Image 1 (cartoon, one colour):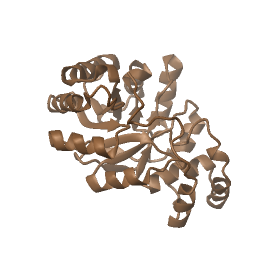
Image 2 (cartoon, helix red, strand yellow):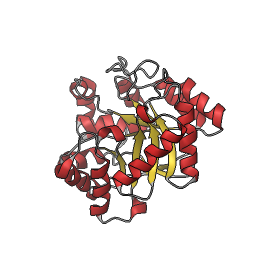
Image 3 (cartoon, rainbow, N blue to C red):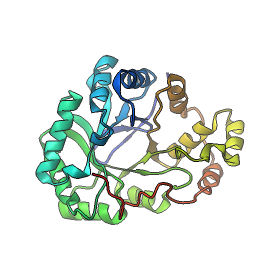
Length: 277
């Protein structure tokens, strides 16, 4: 079973360098898939209110038999729950659905700037952290300007910003901003789902050099650039393959070559315009 290393967030919490995305993992099959991932070494589990599977994630945590402190459960506040009181109520609702006594990392799912409530939502999350409902707080799909506004208005910098990030969209400027401000980058869709990424010649060549798969090359690239990828898979062998990326390294030149695949955002999820409720 691979050992997934950790880094330390700006609030002192240990955070895995690779986690499990759980989108669409529902029902008994979803619970079994999440339990299998935990048994394969995953300790970071990523869910959201809008994924409609918080119940399954909580049940998998219980069935795993691991000490609760060994696992880090992430959830996300949807756009319809923006606002100070609404955010706290959303977190309490997630806790009830999860059946857990705390959420380890709570994120704002999308900033929804036209609504104009993400700062108030952030204040509610700070209060929830002070009450012990959550351990760490962060955001998802926030820009540099939005992150700056949160810190300037509240004095609290997000611990994590989870964003679309893969070799087609490496987000160099945003990652540099994160590094400068102590924010951990987390990658959603790290393998650029529904794209031809894994057939790119450079990935095939590097996979041959390192005796791994193109998927492992991409996930190792995330690790090398200092981002936590959260690939989703319900297949036990694929889960193990995805987690087994800590036994080799890429050179600086290889990382640059992979980043050169950049072509831009794939799904139109510009945080300044895209909104989800």
